[in-house]
Amino acid sequence: MSCFVCVGTSASCSRLIESNSIGESCSSSRRAARQFTANTARNTRIPHRPRIERTSLSHGRLRRRVSVTMSLNHQSDGAENSRQVRSSADAESERGSAIDASSSDAKETEVWWRKALNFMPPFLLGSGAGAVMVCVTAVMMITAEEGVALGSDQISSQEALRQEVGLFESIMHDIEFGYVDHVDTRRLFEKGVNAMLSSLDPYTQFENLNSAKELNVKTSGLYGGVGLGIGTDVRDEKRVMVLNAFEGYAYEAGIRPGDELVAIDGELVAELGLERTTEKLRGEPGSSVTVQIARPGVGHALQFELPRRRVMIRDVTAAALIGDPNDRVGYIKLQSFARHAGLEVRNAIELLNAGCNDERGLAALVLDLRGNPGGLLDGAVEVSGQILPKGSPVVATKGRAMGSELYLSDDIPALRPSTALAVLVNGQSASAAEIVAGAVQDLDGGVIVGGRTYGKGLVQNIQALPYDTALRYTVGRYYTPSGRCIQAMDYAEGTEHMRRFDEKQRKVFRTRTGRVVRDAGGIDPDVVVSLDRMSDLEGSLLSSGAFLDFAD
Image (cartoon, rainbow, N blue to C red; front, side, top):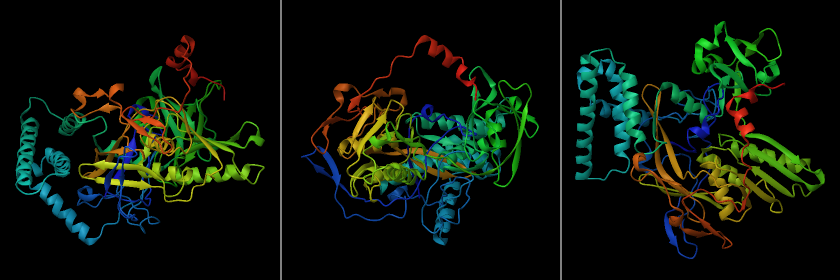
């Protein structure tokens, strides 16, 4: 039971929503699974197996024998438990969306964790290192079990794993009880495990309690809080600034971008830091928090009592008709691929169609994916389903354990066949955003405009671990409808020897109408629009944080 995500680099996801970022959601969609066969006429690999409706995100051995909730705090949402699998995604979070656990699943869960505990000696189970070792055992068992061979090879692999775990716990035990000074074994464990995982690729990570909550925020799109986006001032990291106040939430109470948070419930923000400030702003819907802010031009502090509510982070942040209304040109800004990305895009297109003074609706649509770091794989498929013909291939995934699977658009698109489509991209458009752009380009469904995209063609699985932690690890690569993988960096030999694929190595593929496209380097736009070089004055203003000082 797994949640598949397609997200860009940590740097590209660094925007804060009363915490650390905006991410992606897992809405279950109908998909078609087919085995890959060669299609030499198109230089593509297209699966051919009868189309089936899936009600689970599990794939072969990726279906862990553990009852997993997609929201890692193990809450459930009664409205969604009627289906076997639902979603999760992006910003402060109180969202449930859980996977139902049957009694047999519960027994399998107990068996699996007993198996994990059997790797550990009794003296560790009651020690501080014991909890750490349960996690490291689980991490190593998961990474070792995926795709392992059967028979004697499996036995030797399990024995090698037992030895490795035993060696690790012996080291942890000796350090905990014998090192000259007291050692925080949890911190030591996290550093050791993340060093191990980061040697594979930058996206494979262990998520501790706080980061697992943050990951849940990235993959839910719902959270309990006041509706603020905050971040530290580049000029003084102790200053926490309001970057965004959501309409309908904190904005309505009077908070504005550019305000500085001074105190929360009487505690000085300068002493709390960003992480604890985020935690204090979050909370159960129905409760409230008192916030004191400083505003440029106002000589005294302003105080607000903000109610906490369920806040939904919008994937579509803007939708409007642009230019002359008679031209019937619509614009949609899509900032992420969370739980409701497909539905939000559909609603936006329908509203724009209705807003035209013509029964024909939109003549053209501009879908802006610039700066979009990606999100959930299902989110990308659902968005594509709103702008591509029903039944169109959107993306294929392939991995050692997950096998091969083709995702098709299953919905009647909101975009009318007569509407021209342009998709805007740049170097910060990554992963799920590249899936949409690649599908549009390969199927000649529109024109791609801007700069070359980031080039992330990898898919991650989010696996729940004990103690509200999680493991995020790469399980496969994705391929656009023409059969190309747009992954720009080669991690075959680990991050120590990673390299960018050379331009000469990029293979040629063909779109539906025969146009040439290439793999291994992101999505090359059909129409290149390069940005003007930033002036020295602009660079100075940006680096000094001057853009935070403005009149509301």
